[in-house]
Length: 198
Image (cartoon, rainbow, N blue to C red):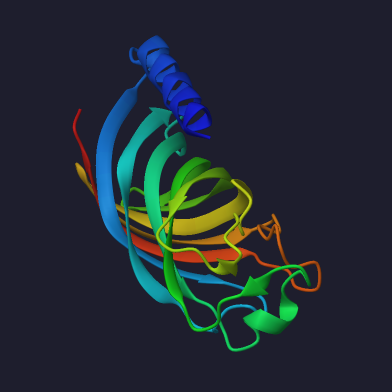
């Protein structure tokens, strides 16, 4: 899975280097990742994590931009009291355990300027699970799939080099490897500040 993350980085670097002369800008961003995983196995409610990384902004026209990104995102969740009962019969889920899932996400967004200082954005994203902070199964095993596809939509304020934004990401992939009777999907709200380097 680390190879997949490195491959994504290499593709973005190649894309950036090949199109730099065509109105391309690079920047960095950081912010808060409010996350939850749907399903009976986890407590309802968003928990706070960190998100940050790099983005490119390719001008397609005066109104349209393409914005690929490479982001680290931390998803904090807590297993529920029902987790024990929804797990595969040969394993036992550990209830009431808080864990962090560490993802590398690669969203590719289309950005449309409603007015010069405000853009709306939407597009697909693929996430690669790099690690988890705690085990949630007895006996120990990987509970989560390592790849997650999602759709992203949000808005961004453009203040010269400074970018302020908020977006919502909805997971399309059932990321559970251990609960045939429950469906786990990522949901994220990100609030961030970015800065164009050039």
